[in-house]
Length: 149
Image (cartoon, rainbow, N blue to C red; front, side):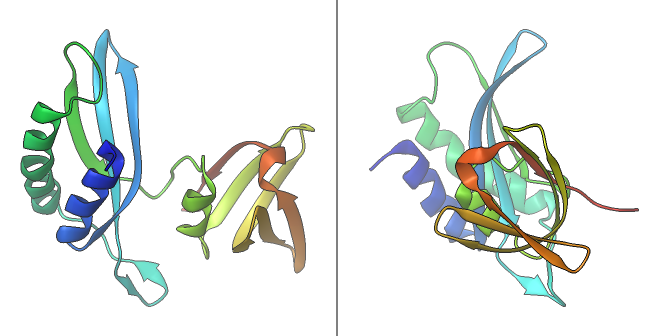
């Protein structure tokens, strides 16, 4: 099994969903970031993830990374929620964000903002002012969820 599938199993064991894993460099430090979200939905919205659950998950993942490090050299493990406003970089990210507001930039420099309605195969459907805009995943250059205050 791959490292990501092993991490996914640990995330599921605490009743969460794995959103993404990433290796990032910030302030001359390498960080292995594990982003999670609740699998529980109440009133059409995902329930939050507690800090205690993130700490518990950190303690579960850390020994796995001792055996199978995600990068060579020094790094820091960071486990947290994906957040209200988050990057959408895979079809799986889009599927987990159905029903949320999204901002999408296409490879043709077009901007689409609206409610993510559905994902079918490699097509993304966004409701914009009572119309449905259909986008091909490969035509998206950048996308994220957003929250209106």
